[in-house]
Length: 163
Image 1 (cartoon, one colour):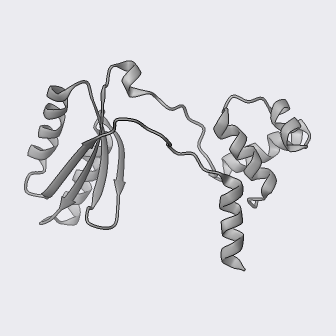
Image 2 (cartoon, helix red, strand yellow):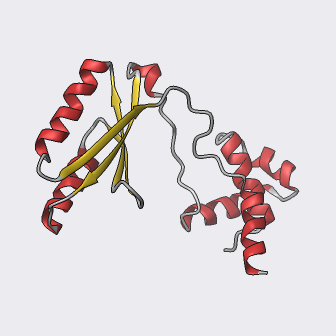
Image 3 (cartoon, one colour):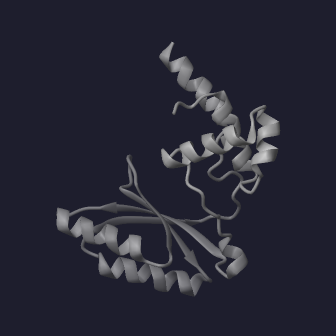
């Protein structure tokens, strides 16, 4: 399946309201309900998007959403794997990315308050003290945009690159 304008419109609509009915989507893109369902099923199967809900941590008692940048040093492949597994399986780690640039990893941690944050980060820092070279953390105060893509503009950018 290729990413065409119709698929981009469908993806944009689903980003606005992931519970939008096939009927409503079909009216907005000018296709039959069956065609919309086939396109969504195909895009889902091919991994164009993942159906999931977004939890609002502050609504459930985690007032601190903390972005931590970590720089590593003095480690081997086994230790790196243990580091990644530990953070991937940590119930307070919401996101873990290997990144390029000054830092090696970015980690998003959820904490109830400053004492809770200190306990969570201290556990990570103590467990991997010989690997962690540098650490910087910042608290997210407001999310203005999160994981929202204008698929029609992205498609246009891709076409312009090929031209």
